[in-house]
Length: 117
Image (spheres, rainbow, N blue to C red):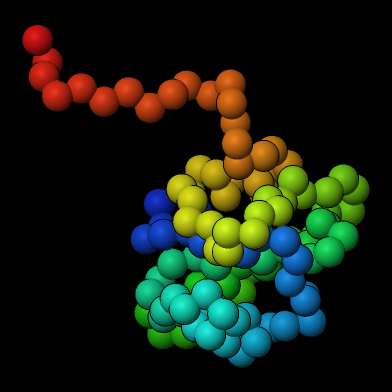
């Protein structure tokens, strides 16, 4: 079952990906172009040029799974960067799938303390 809330890691392919690729093509892209392990259990997310289709590839112990979402209206706010693949938190993937940006400037900032008192 697809659950991006707490996967091992989430990787987003910025820019566009040819959505004619299926499991074999996307897993080769992950291994060769991103130099990542497609069998790691991590989620690998891809978006098309029109920004209305997202595919998420992951290994689920006994085989690859390919999750596909097509929007009937609107577009995904997919990141465009020259830095290569993005390593993000599961909540940021959920934001993208819900039509939000991964850069939520108005969200609470992470706070960490070393001592209670």
